[in-house]
Length: 324
Image (cartoon, rainbow, N blue to C red; front, top):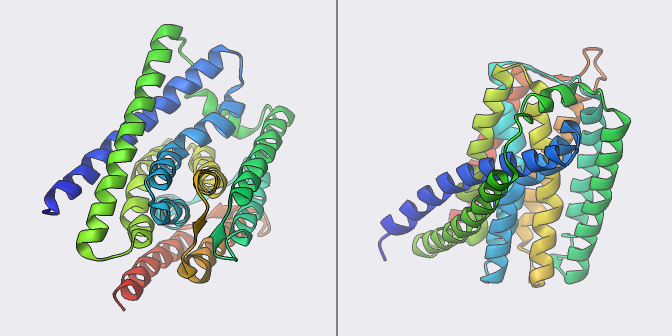
């Protein structure tokens, strides 16, 4: 089979994933708002879930079709791209300050989640017990985020979310948009998995490699555009909050779903290479964003350059080691 069809399928699927994920978040957020959920809680939970919906559904489709390596690569690769590419490039344009108290508490939580997630990968196996543990910790994290949102109702992040969750719409219209968006997400994620697997087979590269590179970067590009738009509007909390929330869901929900659907073996490179980069970048995010330097915490242009350089170096390493 010519590569033209799988490549075209991936391009179309990524476009549909980006559009449908955005509409899904918009519809679900508006429904939650009309039911009385505060904008801050919507941002910390529903928006975070929605931005990870493509990765979660790709994980489901990959695991059910026996391509779990693709799902694992996409989960970790997306987190690496979110920090190194999205926040790195965005902060090179405009330094990103961290003023939200909730975010300063959520970032250390993210590091703890990443360490926990990696610990379950050390034996190079994901069992159903691991999957249950991932989902259990996710529920605890969501409970903690909801508590934080209620504890800090006037946090700066709440104002930024409030600007994007308003304008009452008929419930029938919102429900229709949300359901159709979810269907498109399901179909496009399945098509993306098919295209990625076909390219991996034709190019004689591993599904893990495709998940860590093409699929991970592709699913992160819409978030890059959204983050740049947010910082241009000076909504810095939204910019960082979207990445932190997405990474939390990717590290727990995606790997949890994969493990529950079917216990799988994990490539040693995930533990020895990818997890190390994942942890290292999350530590960098914590160091840059926590107010230990007397500036309230921020990612400046130089730090953004470092993050982008790490991303480029990591992608180069993937291709070098794949070819060796």
